[in-house]
Figure 1 (cartoon, rainbow, N blue to C red):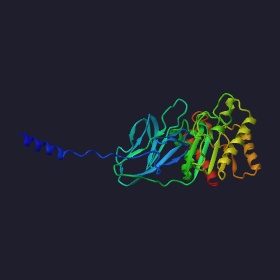
Figure 2 (cartoon, rainbow, N blue to C red):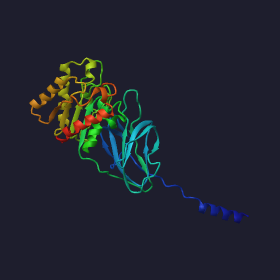
Figure 3 (cartoon, one colour):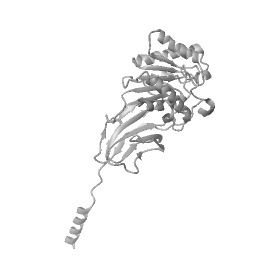
Amino acid sequence: MIKGLLVTVAVLVSTAAPPASAATSSSPTDPNVKYFGRWNTSSSSAYVSEWAGAYLVVGFTGRTVKLKQRRAIDFFVSIDGGPDVSYVNRTGTVNLTPAPLAAGNHTLRVSYRPIAGSYKGDAVYQGIEIDTGARTFTPAVPSKTIEFVGDSITVGQQSSKQALTAYGWLTGEKLKVGHTQIAVGGACLHPAADGCLSMREGFLRTGLALNAPAWNFSRYRANAVVINLGTNDVGHSVTKEQFRSSYVTLLRRAREKYPTAAIFALTTFRKRYVPETQAAVKALTDGGDRNVHFVDTLGWINEATDTTDNVHPNDQGHRKIADRLAPIVAARI
């Protein structure tokens, strides 16, 4: 009996299934991950995007990919250049390929919903998991980048996919260049006395907070900077002279950080501070800077049909803006 029992146990041990192999992981520090926009990389295990329109692209082999999240967040995913798929309030390890892909090389793009107002998601990238034995690789990405600096209109608030349906993202995609939206809802240009967040100062920072670390501008060099500010300053008692002076400061800062970039100052779609915007551009061109451009947006959109509330463009409005803006930027870069 004992001998027979030992034989039975031996057979069971020899025929048991081997343990499953661990999936291949890619961390935020993987050099094959390409980041667009301003990411806080102070933690090697969790990269954080705070401004709108930041995204990442990575290539991978195999048939499946999972995104590793910390806490709940809304995000958009495009695989192999396909439509951006919305994932709402997801946390943990999120399976992005419930139907496995064909074997081969693939690309993944991830963009998080902007953190602003009442929305407090956790826009943190912790890496991906792919098939056992698969690998990541450096994807083909554009060599040029445009920064769009603004407020809720540049964020894309009240459009269907926020940053992804905003004119900045759409313009970048039209021109097949990298792009990012350094913008937040409610922002002013001038640091108003009542505390309105100033993009004159925010332009220099990694994130939204007043004590956010200074951005390291050597991380990438923008080929163009598009500024659309002034819609909110009126409501914060910013004078015309304060606005003009702050605009000159912002333009000079953009030139200092990006010596060869084309800089575009758009008039607000509500026609606020138009002479002051034009005067700020003239101050730089009179000083010898020939690559700063005033862009009159009069007539680009119709408030009645192209906005959700007479202020924020709807999807159609953002597409119209991108259609008008793209050739202007293309001519300079």
